[in-house]
Image (cartoon, rainbow, N blue to C red; front, side, top):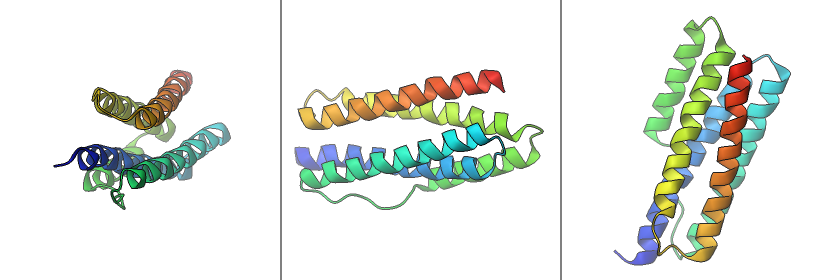
Length: 148
């Protein structure tokens, strides 16, 4: 497998995760009443949509094709979120817990890709920018969770 294909596969994995996160945040924004949480979740969904566009562009720059759609694992996770919030006495707290869990996993996944020292500098810069935004969102969601 050539190097561009190898990097593109890793970027496509991140792209899929961003599709999943976007859908998860849309689900969360539709299932909370608190206006500030609704806004937070909606902003995160838009941010993840933007990340997806950036990753697709980077994959195309490497001469490969971006994947389309979310993962089965993401679909199952959203179903779990739906069940959990349906039976939870505090939907907002349950959604915040899932957001924390998802953002922690995302940061780890970005870190794993960034460990490849052969990643082109432009790709590494993009991934660091996205990872740092996810880390900032994680910090904010942890604060929101402690306030809930």
